[in-house]
Image (cartoon, rainbow, N blue to C red; front, top):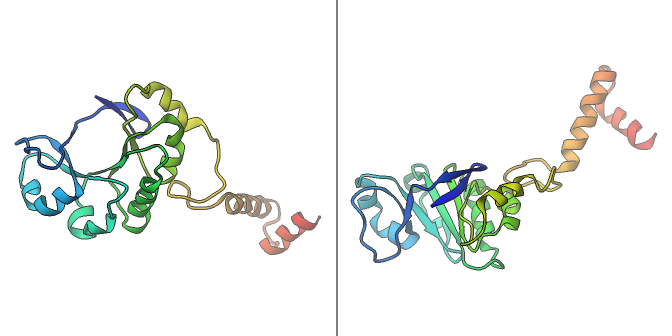
Length: 189
């Protein structure tokens, strides 16, 4: 199976293991949070990497920042329905509050239209709903040329980025003027 990872279509090397399924001896596995919490030591001892599967109802704070998140290569967040936005919040929490730096994957009922918003929340991998085109979905990365609000992918809101550009232009033209007076002149004429 192929997925989108870092804006490219790539082969997926991870296997989803549902609660109660036997663990293969080798390979990269994605397991439910409850299974991870019970079997984290056994998963760490096996050959292959392990990631966690979160649903919208799971609390990401149950993952230990030092013991789990620092060494975890992947967290997959399941979107059970298009209208369920809890996964977006989980993505932002993982990136901003818990400083998770591994692969953050959205899977389930994921459509092309959601990709720009998922990226804003920190997701960098996408498994689309069955029957949807990965190649078509790549176009979603170019749907918006700029954004107004700050988010995981853009720390400064547009007005601050714009104000910074104005201040830089003013410094280049009039290096001895203060930025505050120059901006006031620009605003008030």
